[in-house]
Length: 227
Image 1 (cartoon, rainbow, N blue to C red):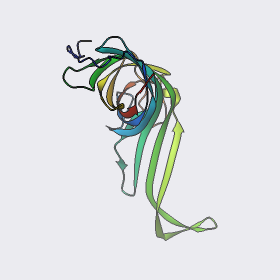
Image 2: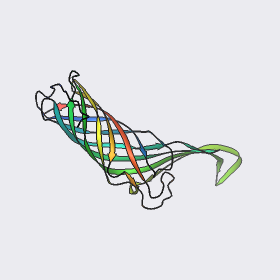
Image 3: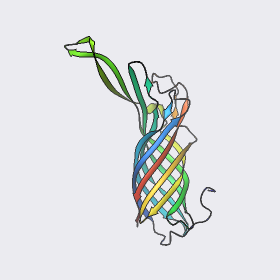
Image 4: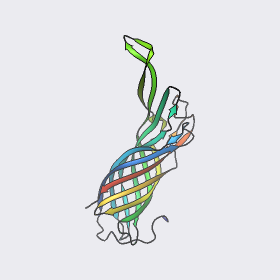
């Protein structure tokens, strides 16, 4: 816990348990040998509730549950008359257990660090394909002289490529102002990686017999109710 502030200001004077519903956004990507396309950051959403249990005037224990959409984007693939934009959309329910400490002289600002379990809800490979094709004239006929822009969206469930449970170390900063909480958390995935492929597949996003990790950042805003 050396990352937590060594000095803190007394902000748990009442020693009351608090409940904080919260919503926000995620910024995430994945990296690893299982992915054979160039990864990019992907935006998603998150929501949940946190319970804070004061341990002293300076430190608290927090836990709760969140549902978060993370995953990764991929760089757009282009050909002469077509392009494809692809992403992995992965949803987890996460349950963290963290120690929170408040900074001295900066009332409302705190740091937190702990452990977290993530339980897979679903994972989908989504792609948008844009191309130019001969115009459909109806009755199964088309014209070789007339062309049109065509967009096709594809989605397939790929949950079987992912582990059902992952573990991580969440770390971040929070700021409270008049019971409104703003929080930024980065989670370092540890132990087992999110993707573990044992068989070959036809998905262009994946390589055979390889692994990949999640790298999510969650930014939330919530309201703290003291019980």
